Length: 376
Ligand code: SF4
Image (cartoon, rainbow, N blue to C red):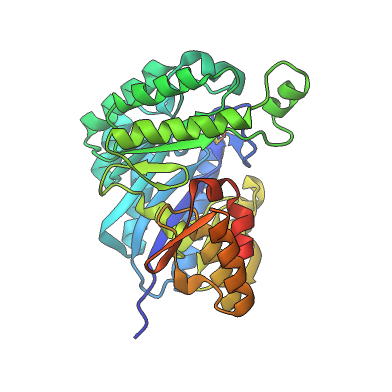
């Protein structure tokens, strides 16, 4: 009998207090009315999928509230939502349940309510530990709010805490970045994500760079920063398990691993993406349309694509190569043309094969997309 694939639930909250200068995500500014509209629509969406029995009783191994900023919704309401999900779906007893939070949006009372209701992982957007880094990227809040949020999360009972960082920020030097990573370690998180700043079209950051008000990211410096983070974090006992992610032993993010290990996930909320039983589908990226469609009991899905077996293999390869331990060799095409390409990539030092797996080298990670398409 074929083994059932793990499945996770992703809830996208497209609401924030304000837009950061680098952010190109679809989002709306959080207001009480939008929060109410979003939550009622989300309950309808949960109910519709429950009626359709899409999951056929499969248990969620993980639940992830992402955004946006889920914690613009008060802790008690998020707790009630999680309770509702547990009432109508099957959730594995040991499921990982994550909430993303901006440090300045959560109080100790919120975090207590979240922990009490079953959230067992919190992911805080620290971004930097140097206050001057926040100004050019328009990231609200202070470093002391990050420190306090971590302390409150721990007091509330969270033992699994992720902190997000960004590097290559305007004005950030290799020294200040290394100091940020070291300062973050003082907060004793179990997981750290380090993302390179990218400049997206039509953001305030892109306009500020075009007008010469802010320097553009220096890609060479970003490569040095990536290497410095790896050195500092691995020396501190973290394992780099994915291009941007580091964890203490046993704390790799189980939900995000679904994306990189060809697992299934059902995504709800405006702009959320799903991958269930070989079918990819995505929701409309517009809160008002999302809510009005659900008021008419229609799922707000805008695109749906059934993947062929070959397409599924390609996607598993592309996403799987982001993992530091790579992909099983069974995902690689086994015919003479491809064996030649493989030999070339090995000779160029872009990939390594050991035992039954193929993985990118540090050089290969810089050209990950083209290596993946060569391998396919
Ligand atoms: S908090 Fe995150 S989602 Fe919200 S605007 Fe800033 S970067 Fe974008």
